[in-house]
Image 1: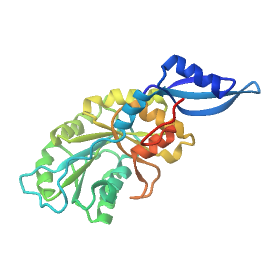
Image 2 (image 1 turned 90 degrees about the vertical axis):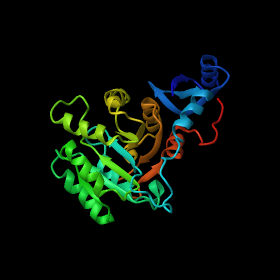
Image 3 (image 1 turned 180 degrees about the vertical axis):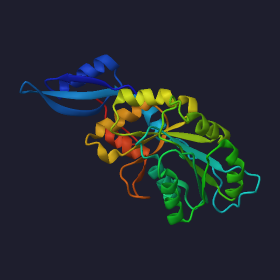
Image 4 (image 1 turned 30 degrees about the vertical axis):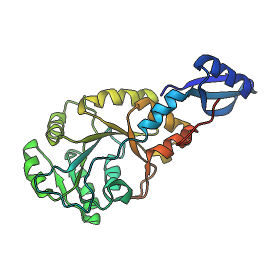
Length: 277
């Protein structure tokens, strides 16, 4: 979603400037009063109703296709596989633990965990600790040849969540092994985890860099570390991918939220409507 900034001496004149530039369906996303050498000015970020509708659709993606927990999965049926990718420090492992045990994510379905992050010190142990606490099966993949055996051990799972190393796809050292393993797993969804504190140009670069991994969704993390709500919405609109969840803290499993209300609220747009400029 494209947000344009307009400023002027008062809200009426700024709203008129936004409508003149964007058309009659111009909408104010958020506004603030700023001071320029002591003189107050009104600054607004505006977009169009069409852009807001597109953004709302991205934040209300279809739920993952996974059979109801009441229906037993047949041995030959493939589980839903969801992978998390992203830069170092994005909080992928903690987010994966939240998804595994938060009832709003996958309900009562049987969840299994796989980690491809066998390079970072303590990474496997961290995920195994989460798995043990939640009584979930967990497999570490050191080589693509390990996948078939791991999948057999996870054969009774309805959902498999995959953790990956915090390395950019352009990293050459040891990247080939885990990327090959991820391709062999053929995930149904690949969520790009980006910290809310990242600058917009870094987020755009990350989206481009991780595209070869087949990213399908965005997952903005660590919203609690960003003081300005508008920054969250700008980040989500920059990534411009469907988003199902966001995270806003370290607590497992509670700090996992639906993306729509959280991000649209940060933008100043209600989930079902927005005020016209």
